[in-house]
Length: 173
Picture 1 (cartoon, rainbow, N blue to C red):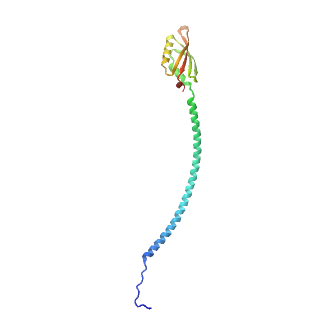
Picture 2 (cartoon, helix red, strand yellow):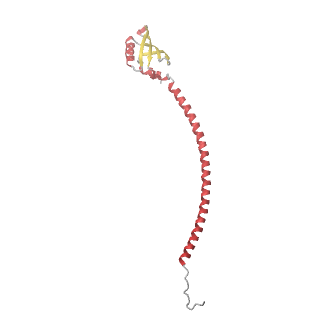
Picture 3 (cartoon, rainbow, N blue to C red):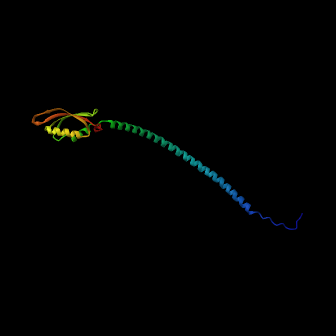
């Protein structure tokens, strides 16, 4: 059959062709991006693993240092406990300088740190000086109590004596 009237040419549809081309390009780009990003992800995971390993090594070293420091801290705490409980007798000598009358001469001192007692042996220029010394000792807060012993009058009006002191424990800290 021969047709006499020519048929109009069918125009190809450009839109579907363009969409197909764009779709194929997007598909290729998506696949490329997937594999590219997958490679980057694997590389970053490898770097992360290396960093975690380094961090674990540093944490191990840090843990060792912490243990060592804890040991030293324990030793220092023990030392401070010992030092805090230790009685210091040197404070007593500055205390003596503060409480002894200027006209009293000390001849000897016996200190018992454990009991908190002291025996003072000395000479006063006169009986009134010794009386002043005893009155002053009553006002000193570090002295809990005292007792005058072995009083004796000597030549030239001097008075030799012994005083037994019971002292506050805070004096030896």
